[in-house]
Amino acid sequence: MLRAEQTPSRRAVNRPRFARRATLRRSLRLLGSFKYEQTDPAIFYGGVAADTADLVKDFYRDLTGRSLRGTIVLDVGGGPGYFADEFGKLDSRYLPVEPDPSEMHAAGLKVAGAVRGSGMALPFRDDAVDVCISSNVAEHVPRPWVMADEMLRVTKPGGLMVFSYTVWLGPFGGHETGPWHYLGGEYAARRYRRKQGREPKNRFGKSLFAVRAADGLEWARRTPENVEVLAVFPRYHPRWAWWLVRVPGLRELLVSNLVVVATKRTPHSACETTDFVRAG
Ligand SMILES: C[S@@+](CC[C@H](N)C(=O)[O-])C[C@H]1O[C@@H](n2cnc3c(N)ncnc32)[C@H](O)[C@@H]1O
Image (cartoon, rainbow, N blue to C red; front, side, top):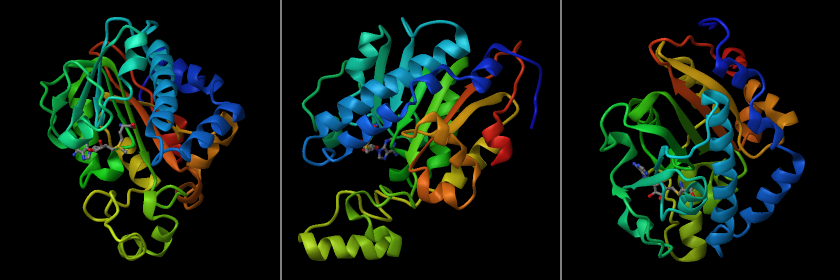
């Protein structure tokens, strides 16, 4: 749906700054770090954190023309706060929200201002933060689209919301129970317990849910009029493969991680929804 005239954020829709970073070299670098997720999470999460900070910095610059200096960045499901350093380097005030105390303390990081709470009922007032992000959390939440709505609620008009999650039918959808999730989440969980002698950390139906790429696009399509969806793309893919988001079926298998970038309109701004959403 075309919502209005040319706006600063319309430029972000056409030529997002971040697209220039989305090279094959970057994809291979990130892919190389995935194997450390369970054995050395600091390597994996450190790389993803730097990349995420670049993504947020670029989209915020496209949207506002400003750096992240002095902004409040709320990270929903921030875990131990691996992203704190990277956003700190950009002089923003980084606040993780996390419901699970054991996750909060998992890496021994101390993040000032860390808040305990759920993304499905964020303990913040409306329009409280400049940037609200969530990375690899929606697939762990029973009602991810309530969380997405909450994230928009707490984002200031003119601020940025970045919602990114692992697609169920992608290669990493089953997490440590993959690739058996292709035969069903419950089967994959039982098989893991049989083979490993313990429950998987990410237990299907309890802490792991089947979220489709189509669900993210559907959410983006039904956002209210005061919300502008700036971009929807596969998080780890090079720019030339972003078209995958447009292809039903194929996107479920190959997108792997979907990013939805949105902003809330200020009273005086106009809106335009990205082509990816319209074509989806
Ligand atoms: C895979 S970790 C992602 C951590 C971090 N965002 C990152 O990308 O490195 C998923 C996180 O989501 C958190 N989580 C689970 N349910 C949640 C909820 N209802 N609200 C917010 N976070 C939740 C988990 O506790 C966990 O820390």
